[in-house]
Image (cartoon, rainbow, N blue to C red):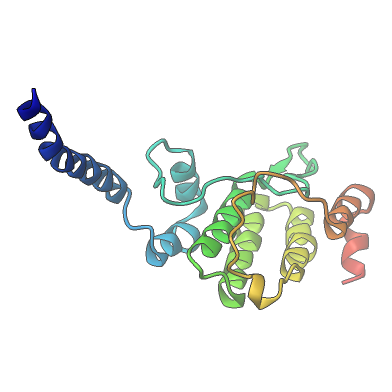
Length: 192
């Protein structure tokens, strides 16, 4: 009995090391959780490819994928001439992915924030297609408000585990809602 116990205790560290090794291998199968991998996902691949990755069960678990879509802003552009809404949810989800993972990687700075914000603008413009008023809203309403949300440099790389888990209402977001729902885009453009 004592010899079995000693054998078990002797083999336990080896067994645990094997289990830990297996878990490590599973994590690395996702690919490295580093800035180049993040940058490819957030800044390089087309939105359609990013969406497939976002919706995949095999997406890299080492990154933060939570999204509240377009936060408190409208998730879509109101009906276009043909009656269809233009969804901004995938573009906003990629933007959330960018901000959250830049912070986790300690790389959230003005340069990377601007790249993420430009990808948001470009993705919205792409989603709008030929709908000119939608394009103007993306360029002259959404994008300037996102760019305006600057934090002090000291706060750039603070990661809050609650981030993305709640919705925060901001006065700028209220302004977006008012502009989109209560004014025509031509009135908005005249003021810019």
